[in-house]
Image (cartoon, rainbow, N blue to C red):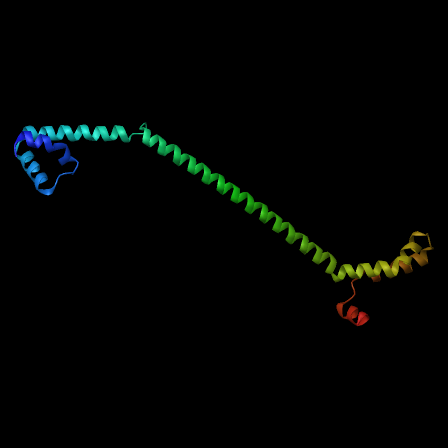
Length: 163
């Protein structure tokens, strides 16, 4: 292969577009000809600079890709935020429901509170007597009765009394 043919195939050779035999012939000539080898180096350098310039951050294609990526990332963030808000609101509603259910269970189902309600229902007349200004002896008896009523009754006694 001579210099003129080598120069004609030089860009295709550098880009790897030649068939194996032609590429071998061009490479063989470049190894034997200093002028063509120097030109091949210069063309390769210019080609690399051109690729870098086109692939740089100011390249229109890269700018478009960057804007698309930015938009996709923003949409993904918004989607995650919406999911977190929904999860937070659902979790908050669930927690409030659990607290309400537990509050109702413990306030309505507590034996001590039921016992206190029984006490108020059965002994309300004692309270009226104390506040009506009975003498000290009667007040002490009523206070003793109130103290006995306020002390929780053992579970066994409540079961035998109600059962």
